[in-house]
Image (cartoon, rainbow, N blue to C red; front, side):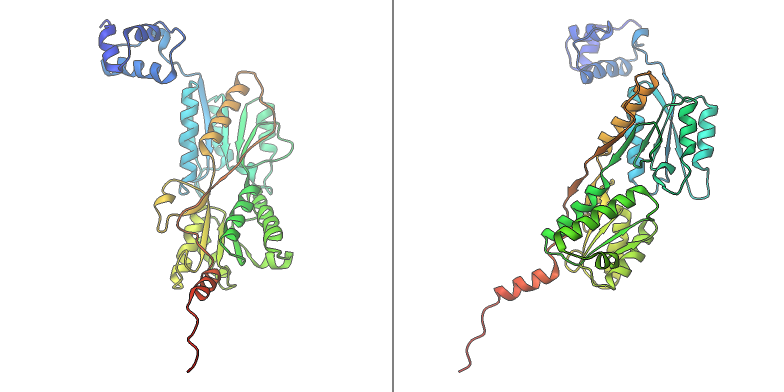
Amino acid sequence: MRARLSDIARQAEVSEATVSRVLNDRPGVATETRQAVLTALDVLGYERPARLRKRSAGLVGLVVPELDNPIFPAFAQTIESALAQSGYTPVLCTQTPGGVTEDEYVEMLLDRQVAGIVFVSGLHADTAADHERYRKLIARPLPIVLINGYADGIEAPFVSCDDREAGELAVEHLVSLGHRRIGLITGPDRFLPVQRKLAGFRAAMHRLVGATDAEIDELIALSLFGVEGGKAAANRLLDKGVTGITCGSDLMALGAIRAARQRGLSVPGDVSVVGYDDSPLMAFTDPPLTTLRQPVIAMGVAAVRALVDEINGHAAPNSEYVFRPELVSRGSTGIAPQVTHLAAAAAAPAAAPAS
């Protein structure tokens, strides 16, 4: 059926001249407007002109950890969308405990002749892992991009959130609320992002609280990532009298809140808790979670652009692109309890003199 410009223009809410420019693939039309016209074609049942039919430029592998942590589906969605907009078909590979390993997924992707692979929080973030696997991929040659982790000697683009900065920002926020006894909960320290958070936490505690190395060591609790790991680590810190807890993930923060409540403590009345990621739904927890937001969209788009450049032979600089986290203050942090008590005492009326 031949497309009528007037019908398409009416459906897309644009002029017929704009429809004509889009159908003839001429410049000067905004991306959103062009998409609206193409969508109108689809809705009205018209066939797109051959020049406007997207052909897949190839497959790209996307390897992510388990999807229990909502930050990983958020990364996957952003990266898949950016790949699709660049004409590539994403192949999502999700790891689960005891399931298919990263190396097994890579073999499967190589069998499918993918044009490149994006790794999110993979073995490249594990300092105890053998990184020769990535050097072999590059030598094939196969373009790769690695998100949230860095290792010397891998000639590929890295995209990371500034974990050291996140560690410092969390402490700064809690100190600004009067907290001095501040603990850190995070995962195993063989992971580079954990090492960087530890460095930021230590630096801020030295600078803002004046804590010694020995005192800081007492305020660090390493555990498994996840709600249960956060709960177990929080119990150890609460035994040491902390009033503020900063965590290596939002799920660990939710575990810390659970541990506090099971002790009859209120959050943030007795204990303030800071997460990390700002994964979906954290604004709707009880209380809404104060957290360090990873700029997932900016990081995902940057990773895809670097990969597409590599695929097209325009090699991106083999360095680490570091994105700054953003502190999102919500209801899980408040004035330190000792500060609140001092303020209440200062506001109390003086006792009447004895008669």
